[in-house]
Length: 266
Length: 277
Ligand SMILES: Nc1ncnc2c1ncn2[C@@H]1O[C@H](COP(=O)(O)OP(=O)(O)OP(=O)(O)O)[C@@H](O)[C@H]1O
Ligand SMILES: [Mg+2]
Image (cartoon, each protein chain N blue to C red):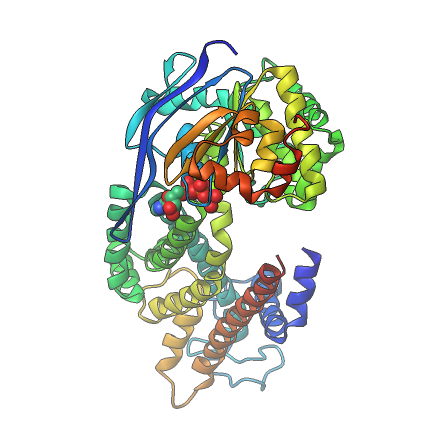
């Protein structure tokens, strides 16, 4: 799928809490091409969220390097970093917690548009139009802009979160358990939406999940994490059909549907 | 919001507090219309007892000034000092607490040591020292009272901010490239405010009392009537005309009680609302 868009090398992160050291990331390396989805799977506490947040520059790693589009992503500071953040966006697990409790949907979508100066060339009247476009993009009526975020359903809220992530026209979206908190019925439609967006805009995803069944649907490649390390990585169908690592085998075994359905070609 | 108001009105404390405060505000607002003359001017014989002269229902003081006029105009001073001191204290405290909690590290350490320094000095001494140095006037008194009251809001706001800054929506704001100052003041501060607002009633009540105590010590604004100065005046004839001290004293007690009960009602209604979410 072309040359790597994201390259991470030797990422390491140790948390110090109550006198104990927890190695959340231990020599983690991976690459990601434009328009590709990397599924990040592993048991609870294996460091998936930490890796997601390090990628987002929400947590600083202790060691390692990340290059994005050939640029040293970890060297950016202050204003330069804030400007470049538009290229990488994030969708969180709990859509309710990911929005200011006082925010309206329109306000939440307006922030990234305003900050990145998208659509405010000369006239601010452009922004409501962009907000309506974004809402339509994720399958919500434009009238939702006036509603408070806490007034809509969980699935709708996650659509708003995706719309917010799309507002800055990113090249990569990091999704940390983005469908785990949703009903199974809603989950499928959100995954479809993500696939559609990827197809039309060529956005790359890092899709974090503890559930291989979900990852199988959306990821081109998977990386399996265990205790802060990536223990196995490869094309999704291959890894699911024949996991090499102990953790890979355990995860595949934990989802019985995979054993039966692995020949149906996801 | 309407449900919130209903719940507030249904709590007995809130209702009583609201009525008392409404009376106080009405007194303060109506004072210049009912008694357009300067309440410090002499209107009759000195020391008329209350309820003996229909035109001077609460009688006169040692100099022949109308006690009812003083009471009503005095409500203005108490209310002004109480409300503005609380506003200043909450505004300064919340901003300092937010900056300390959000910035962390050295800035947090430095700001919290300043808070400690202000907190070890009793609020009244702080106000006393400040007013005796700068000279008494209403704005100075407001500031002097706020000086001893902003540390509570600062501590509460900081504690709240420390928990809020770990929430996902703050991470989301960083992820879209929002400036840290905008995150602190637009995303974090408004959500840290509710518990701080619960302090307002206590601050207003103590501000009213501190103002009265300053006036009692002759450190109030000399150009206006205040309840504290009326009590100080009445003290000279406490045996022969106790009502001169009792009337404004009553005003003080009811005001503090009203503010306190009103605050209790608000906190209770707020607790219900939080519980529901
Ligand atoms: N801020 C922190 N302070 C201290 N330890 C932390 C912190 N964040 C994460 N950890 C620890 O780092 C390890 C990895 O955590 P992380 O959240 O990345 O795991 P995860 O794979 O996302 O798990 P889950 O599936 O439960 O979300 C865990 O042991 C966790 O306790
Ligand atoms: Mg996680």
